[in-house]
Amino acid sequence: MSIFDIFKKLESSRPSSAPIEFIIAGLGNPGTKYEDTRHNCGFMAVETLAEQHGTQIKRLRFKSLTAEVKIGGKGCLLMKPTTFMNNSGDAIEEAAGFYKISPENILIIYDDINLDVGRLRIRAKGSDGGHNGMKSIILRLNTDAFPRIRIGVGKKPHPDYDLADWVLSRFTKEEGTLLEPALINAAKAAEMIAGGKTDDAMNVYNRG
Image (cartoon, rainbow, N blue to C red; front, side):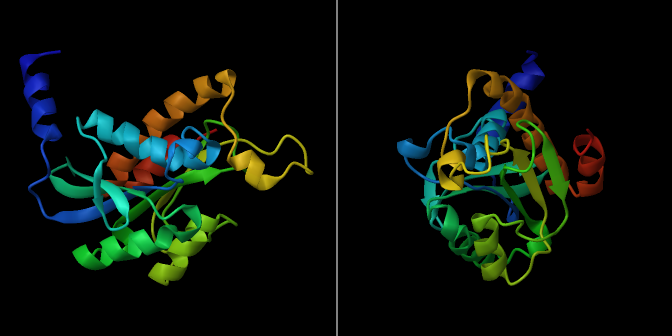
């Protein structure tokens, strides 16, 4: 690592002094009971993004653990709602209202059982797709016109498998090797979207 890279990393680790213009929220459930479960992929992705910017998501605000980072000179609020998944919209609405952030500048990252483990799908808007966290956010924001990154966590092993048990299960070792690069790519895509390059992010990461 060069001296320039070291100073750049130190600078990015400081709280953003820029006004907050963009929200990046990963969805999940708080507490050690739910750590590393399929339903917590959103948490994992924003944690990856925070780590790349030399910070931690630990300040309690807006019913969430938060951190501030600069992406392309733009102040971004990273969020991990502590409301539990089904009430994620409470946290997003509160932060968006405080900073007067419009829906198109709110990125949500969450799990999707309809995608194979490690696959990403990025959209600029869309329905909740049956995801309770997204249902809550759409209800609270009164719109579905906000960008989202879906991270594949795999389908249920068989149709009779309880859905709640599946999304609250942990990844196998083999699945973990597929998930790790997906989290890194999700963080990169989030940076592109925050920088106004949603179409580019879709072109790069929606392949396959």
